[in-house]
Length: 369
View 1 (tube, rainbow, N blue to C red):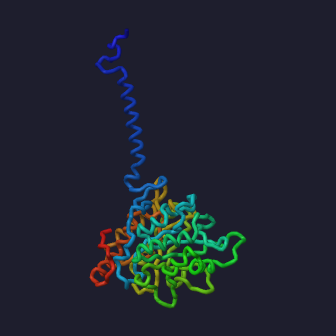
View 2: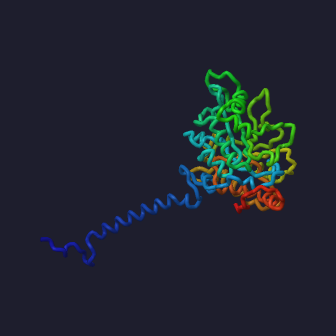
View 3: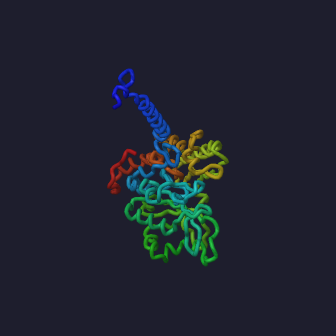
């Protein structure tokens, strides 16, 4: 029968103790490696597909379904600071080169985003949503139903929708024009006509850009398609629009050029006179030589800061300067809670104006975003 004495070393420790120690050391090293690999997410706040950014990806954590209820009716839409999304419907497209969002339209609306980039192509006499030649899997009907349902539930809100004809018609079975297809959704579609009658704001370009009061529960179109019987909205790149859209960037190291364009656009919007002559829009997005997600959050190795972080930091730095009065419409890929909140905070002076007035809007209390 073996002696139990042989199981112990000279100091009374089990002979397997060194093996146990080695195993524990390996376990601790693996744990430390995992924690260190997660460190950027801990520092930067949010990770998505290996990319880290404090101002990106977590729009689902923002919750501002009725922030416009806290603003007066007489403020012009051109005087507001409005967060929005570029290529809004690409959250499920399945291509890194084409994906610009990671949340669906309903989440974006609830988060407080109010500008949406809707790009449609005519296919079989209906409008379907594309990014270039990439099909998103959604139709214009899907977009409208989500928007109508949101506005029914939140009648204080206004939506600004860029509607772009994204290339030539697809297939050989089209018998109508893009404009005619659009008007079918307004006038002859059992799923959308009632909502369109309630919620589309058909803009006459001979009159000033409308006030928020005129646009509550409405969709204000920025029109980027030809028409014979319109117009239906403010003309894209027309004389009522100041647009920043430097989107072709050769590589991540040229994102500095993009940031210069963004900064100049924000400076212009924030310091220009509020005469309601122009709608200010700045695209934070870029592609071609960079992936949309790289432009937004910076590359995975973080050798370059992404445009969402640069923009968010600028907006936070200047929000309390009296001379800086609005951001205009800020159009974002993969927006995050911090960036959305930072933009919305620029509307606080108008909130104070509402509180001083007798306007019976909000059922909401002023929030500290």
